[in-house]
Length: 439
Ligand code: SF4
Image (cartoon, rainbow, N blue to C red):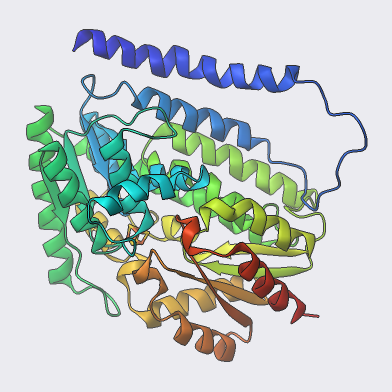
């Protein structure tokens, strides 16, 4: 235990930072390409990108040594993760890890393994990638620490329940489920109480595993930090209400990693303060995410992780920018509600009112608000084969948005994780035709 703890501390405080610096030095020393530089349609890169890489590299590197050194919890993306921090848990987001697998295009390989075990290809690509990674030990991040606790909240989908049950069976460890009733309008008081009671049970289990007691003051403090971090993230998103937007929706997808994985920490808040200041400075100086932003769009649903580059190039070359996305916005909407004066009660409210746990009228009204505030002329609704709960109702939303927000809307069929359910040519043709409709 002591040796493991020393390894873990060295990994986080010495080797992790050294590796990120090594990468920077390598880039500096790499001979510059000769000849004319290729013209591209993007504005100057964000300086905060380097810090983001440092934080996430260190997070995954130190994570390799976390099990046996500190308690480890694997959690779903809509889980009130901050509650774990005062107890010293290292938290892993299998969904974030699966997104990395998708960017690295290893999902088909991992999925093949689980499909042979009887899991259907129609199951969410995140679940297939994660279970495949657990079964094979293969991961682009080196190693994931083994969990002591699995924590799953059904506010995003029911898939996570069956996925985490499979993990619990594999690791033979406790699974805590936070069940959130689906919200029509506003969650009634008894629903919030039901969720709050489950959070109290979560505290019991987490305290038993760590042998520590969570002090009310520590819970209030971490809730305060999570609230600040979420608002800072919101401030970064708000910067795109300006014209031109100082970054693109594709940038947002990558910069959201700390608010998902490190919410409630100083590191997360420091990062978003720096990013917000950089974005606001770019706004003042008229620097856009695109050199020439001619059209502003909204994106709905998860990104197509393995094709972010291809799609962002195509849109940028034509002056189209996703200035807001319902996905990145979700981490602002929930976090701004949590309140240090009532950590568990406010968490019950916040994490029940998650976009995927709310009815279609709520989603429509959110999208109309975003369309208005960010002044978009169109929207692309990603009908995601993997994520059924996010994709359901999109054809109705399309009609209503066109009629009520007076914007052009297209539905793009794809998958957020598995390139086998995606045709790049077809998607490019459809997006090109959509962009031409604005001429
Ligand atoms: S089905 Fe959707 S919400 Fe559920 S884990 Fe997959 S991507 Fe996330």
